[in-house]
Image (cartoon, rainbow, N blue to C red):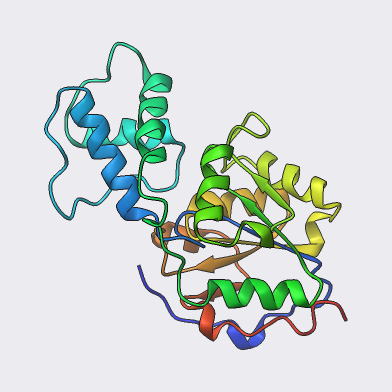
Length: 234
């Protein structure tokens, strides 16, 4: 979806020491890779592939959640192996997608480098499996920008629980009130709220208007228009 950058000029970066980013729909546009992997999982189960231009009903949960909602939307039964195995099959297909099939959103690379140059700590907190997150960030050429990468299997629980974000900040040695979490969905917003972390909404990602139910310090649709937090270390 798209949105307006209505708070860009009023964001107060004072005291911000760390920025944590969701990955899918916030840094990388992984929609095509996710849909392709979901379609291949259906074929593995003996079902028809997804139609062209299919929109996933869930783009914010774990792999098992994503696939379970696809089955529900397609009115297909859960396999006897269960939901957890369903998620593993999806992740196996996702891991086989072309390494550069999930491009960065415009301006991401320059924004991250500029933030690093200012001394800000950067991290990723995603519901993707940790190994797949590392692979995706490396393929996009930005893995070296992050001090910490937290996956859904890093601390035993996924967003919207606050645990993954607090786990990430703990490894950065930064308290919640000195961080901003960048995400695109209501799961990210809920995670930030529960963790006591300010939330910046990337409106051009996979989220919906459900995000508007949560507090935000910033809405933006283009990293190229996002001003660098020059006051962050003041």
